[in-house]
Length: 189
Image (tube, rainbow, N blue to C red; front, side, top):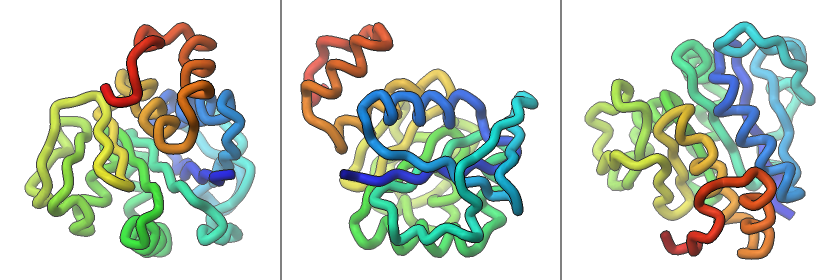
C-alpha cells in the first residue's frame, strides 16, 4: 500500500490540504498529516486550527511513497524555508517516487530546478522561468510529478493522485461518493 505524507505549514491553503487528504482516505490510502511546526498544531491560511498527526522533525520521510505539498502563499513560504524538506523532496522526486504540489507550492520545486524539462501547472502568478513547460490546466501529471493550479483545482489534483495509486473501480467509487462531475471520464482524459 502506498503511504502518503502531506506537509502542513502555517498558512497552507485549507482546501488544498484537506480535500486532498479526504479523497485519499476515501480510497483507503494511508496519508499522514505532517506538521512543519515544533508541535502538532497548524493554522491554515483562513485561520482554521488543525492538529496534525506527526511532527516533521520526528518523521522519517523515507517511509513514504508519496510526498504532497499544499499551497497558500504563506504556507508555501514556510515550506520552502525548510532545507531538510527541500532535500527530501529532491531525493524523492529524482528517485522516481511520486511528488505532488499544488497552487504556489510547485514554485518550491521550480526554484530547486526540479521542474526543468517537465510539464507542470501552478497558480499563474507563481509561474516563472523554471525551465519546464507551463500548462494552463487544473492538474498536470508528468511521470512521477503531479501539480495543480490552485484551490479550485484541488479535486482534479487529488483525482490525478488517485489515478496513479488506485484502480478504476476505486477511482469511480471516490468520484461517485463526492458526486464529482467527471465521474464517467476515463483515466486517459
